[in-house]
Amino acid sequence: MVKGELYRRRLRQFVDEVTVYPVSCERLAAGRSDEEWLDAILLGGGRIVQLRDKESSDRRLLEKARYFRRKTREAGALFLVNDRLDIALLADADGVHLGRNDLPPEDVRRLAPEMIIGLSCNNEEQARQLGRRERAGDLPVSYYNIGPLYPTRTKAGLTEFIGVGAIARFSSHLGLPFTVMGGIKLEHVGELAAHGVRRIAVVTALTQAPDIAGETARWVDRIRTFVAGDGNG
Image 1 (cartoon, rainbow, N blue to C red):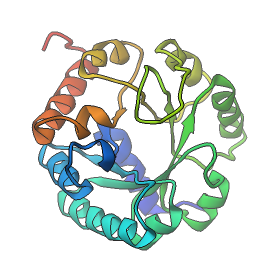
Image 2: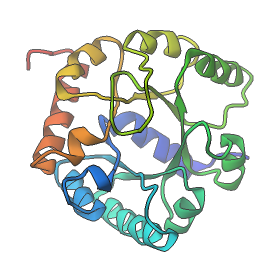
Image 3: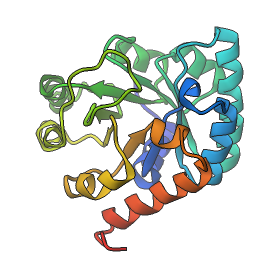
């Protein structure tokens, strides 16, 4: 499926504007709703959000997604849905992020040629496979995520964490934009930027912040500072 101008505009915004990549988790948000979280993220200057909700009913999830779409459109920010292509399409989201047990990205691309598609990479072989598809001109995804880097309690049952050394190994196999995720704190930004990271996905670093808007602004500023090469700023 041929991608059009809308896809190119979305991808360009992802590449040019995204620094911190906030992912929602209402059950770890200190009693605040996903809608309250979103409003604070956008107030703090977030340029992308991902709605991740494995617990709400489909109708409630769609209600949230439409709220996210309305607010992100007003703010000029990107909006992705975790896993649920149906919800993303109904809410007119900018994209979806897929895990390894979710729908195959090539099938998602056929149904959503204009959407950004992200894909999780948890080991180097997965990145290697994406690289082979990229070189063959048959790559349905727009970006990939490297992680989990550090211990995290966002996903139950995880016992293996790949560490920052995985960034260079994974990214050596393909040229796509990437994000990193997994237990990342504000103090890690300098180390990650030194490894070539430009976009950092976080959950509890923002969902549990007492001042979500203020903390979002700090993340945006810190990443921009280190990416610009002035780590002392």
